[in-house]
Length: 244
Image 1: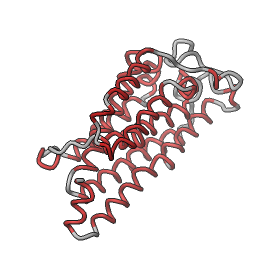
Image 2: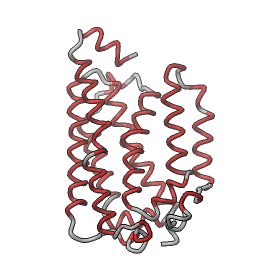
Image 3: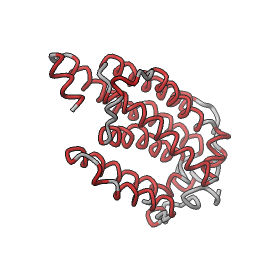
């Protein structure tokens, strides 16, 4: 589909030169850099890594490659939700969370619902063909993930945070398994874009499912393990390590 956001689907010979200089993407990166002085100095490395990741996803040839391969689109979404969202959540803590009374389980459910919604075939095909829906997809996936990671990092209940991370691994793994074992290719957008890369649409979809099922779990499991180890420390040390 030539109308796909990030440009027409590339072929192996051209994808590395297909940069996306969309004003929205460039403006987003510029705004993030302008806001850098407002970030605590010791958290700026995470913030800068997150900003670099935004440029990678939306400006580099990786953006164009998502127009050809659903598996790369899934990598894009996993990086957005499981790598960039926690980087920005750590860099921009919300101190009021400890007393806000927000339900972490509700946040986890909302993020899961949004993630599943945008991967429904008809919704996905519409989203990547329209700039408006494309950015709505990105903002809601990132925003719900950012909200969840804020709760995971900056609320004082480590057990709840660990359960939230494990629940996210489970729901993402379920979606990945569904895509992996689906007998037919279900995304019309990629019906004719995967063959130049040596993959049938079904093989591309199955690869996407495996990515979502297995490696995507790593960031959540690593942070869950860190929170578990922190929970085993004396309570004062545990609180200081996560609230600071």
